[in-house]
Structure formats: structure tokens, C-alpha cells
Image (tube, rainbow, N blue to C red; front, side, top):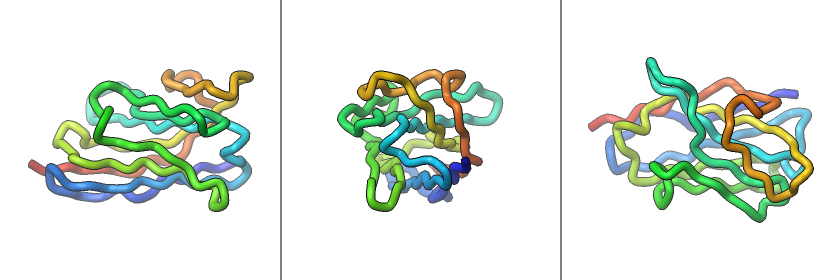
Length: 126
């Protein structure tokens, strides 16, 4: 199983980026997917997640209203649309997947994730 995050880059404050998470070996309709980020010197933190059935999305407070998580079932890709980016959003962003019996479950704890991809760096300049 492999997860691959992509789409990071350098953007000015107020700009937008869309991150993608693709997988080989996992079908995203069979697991919940989360986006997490880690800034230099800080712990990895939850950003957003989407439930296994795709019906529920969850966000950390600091990105609510600016970020949107979604998925394309046909392409087996999960996206994180990031708008109105701020310098404090600068971090390495990771996608991760896990399974729980509740189809509406959306992960928030990095420790509860089963599979991780390599991160993609997002840098927001002021």
C-alpha cells in the first residue's frame, strides 16, 4: 500500500493550492482519509478528514471555511483545496488512511492512522 501526496508549492498569502492524495493498494471508498500537517519544530496536527462513505467531512478550526476536502471515486484521489492561505499554513502536508467500523468516522488523531504517504511542502509567503 502506498499513498502519495502532491500539489504543494510556494504561494503568496491569500492564494490557493490544491493538494492531491493518490493511492496504490487502497480504495478510498473502503477507508477514511485525513490530511495532516507538520510545521518546523511543531508536532504533526490534524487538518481535515473525510469519512469512508464520503458523507462526512471534518476540519480543524483554523482551516474551517478556507479548506475543503473532497474525493473523486473514479480516480481514487482525495483532494484538499486550500484557499485564502496564510503564512501559518506553511508546513509539510501528509495524507493518511485508516479504517474504522463506523462509515461516518473521520480521523483526527495522527496516531490512529494506518497508512501514511510522503508529504508535500506548502510554503505561504507573506
